[in-house]
Length: 122
Picture (cartoon, one colour):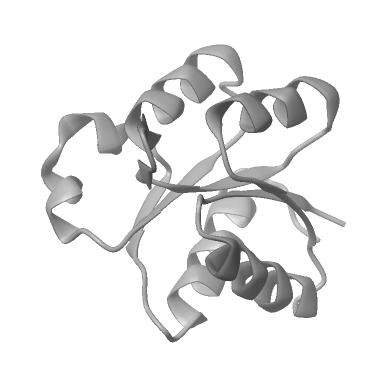
């Protein structure tokens, strides 16, 4: 079973993603801050990170850079309400970029695609 870390400062978003991904058979862990994110990454085996770009006073793009440096084997799917960040060259470090939506199909499709591409199937 693939383990996915959902990083978002909004509890409702984390809850929805946990339910949607859990229904597909993924084990989902949650983090709402940078500290919590790296505490989990340092102690747990994670197969993929779903990362929000706007984390209260912290930058998801900074988190992305750190993940790609310290955990280069873990793919990252950026998930943001802001389309404009797709043009930020830092976001190109991610394996995928999706715009938040009330329809979780795009998220599920990208999670499956990225895990498959990395050879990490359920």
